[in-house]
Length: 333
Ligand SMILES: [Zn+2]
Image 1 (cartoon, rainbow, N blue to C red):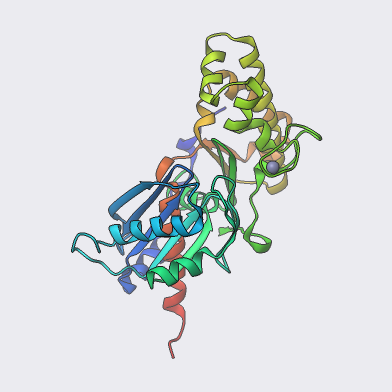
Image 2 (cartoon, rainbow, N blue to C red):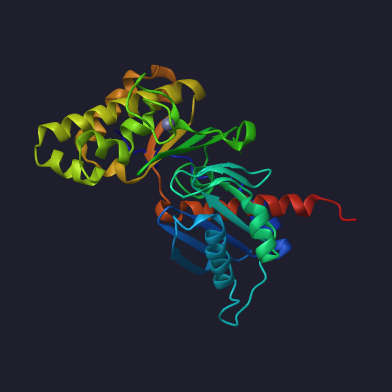
């Protein structure tokens, strides 16, 4: 696996247009990243810089109403309503770890959050906050962030794939975030790799997510966590090595298919599973080659994602900035 950051074009074609428009509107933006473990928020100033942050442990079993309260408290905190240094944000953008319709603001499902079925999150937040809100899939926001400010700078067609507890992906096609019907595009982890294979959280069998995610790797090895499997493999445990090879092989074949299908400029890989060591990477690299044609593969850079924990927040800001450009362009009554 080569990490070819040095060859990447450095132009950031979308930054100027966005910065100028956001600056003209003097808009502050609240970005929120609702994760299964932490809910994090940041206040961005009109130049796109973070000026305040806050986080809280997500009450994942508390249900939608409880989590909306947590998010409202976070938004108040970064907006300074609790410290007397108040800024009035123009919009709050929330990244959600689930299947989201960004047009309606409804979260269809979120596997790591209890009782999240068809939750009208945008409406609930707007009623609670009296603030325009947007809701988006967290992997889509991370893809947008990497494309604008991270590994995907200068790309036209780009995918971000994260493999941690679960597998997520976001697509940028022809310089646009690609959402597909109902906004549910990018479910790379739920392509079936092994017919009648291991049961996936989604209810289907043999999804890539059930094989190559952190949860899938841990389950296959009978371990608590994927990190434990990687450590055992590094220490020479044969069964752990076998599980890692199995996961990396299926992940690589799927990435090869993604490259064939979309002829991407680059794929950025993020998430803790990619820290699993040389055995994982070598297997992954060979499987990508096995699963893709030479020409699209030769033109697709495989790289590490750059923004790490901040990808969701930066992507939320970028989405808001785009929307604010849209507002600026609209004639007012
Ligand atoms: Zn699945």
